[in-house]
Image 1: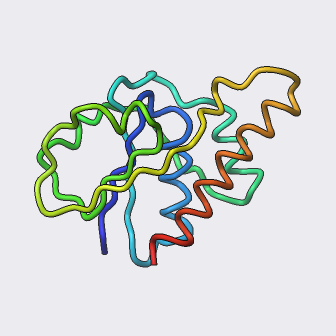
Image 2: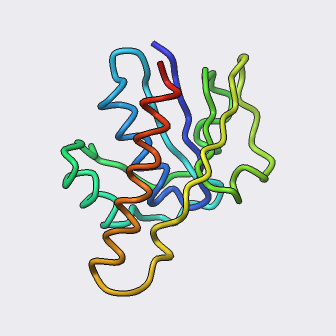
Length: 136
C-alpha cells in the first residue's frame, strides 16, 4: 500500500476532497492523508457536501498541520494549491515523488449558491480526473 500526503495551505477544501477521493477510488493501492501549511482549523462544509453529492464518503476530516506528518515516510506528496507548492515543506522521509495538481480554490468562489456549488464541483472533477489518470 502506497502512502500519499495531500498538501494545501488551509487543509479545508481541496486537500480534504483529494484525500477522500483517493481513499475511496484507489483505496486498494493507496492510503491518503491531508494537511496544510497554515491549517484553517475547520473543514469547509461545502467540501463535505460536494463529496457526499458525488457519492464519496468524506470520512471525518479535520484540518491539520503538515507538521503532524513530518518525519513520516510517503510515496507521494501532492500539492493541490499553487501557494503550498511554492512553500518550503517539512522533511518527509523516504524517496517520495512530488506532484503538483493546481486546483482553483472553491472557498474563494462568490455569487449565487449555484455558482458556489459549481466551483466546488469543478475542483472535485479536476481532482478526480488527476487521481484516475495519474494514480495507476
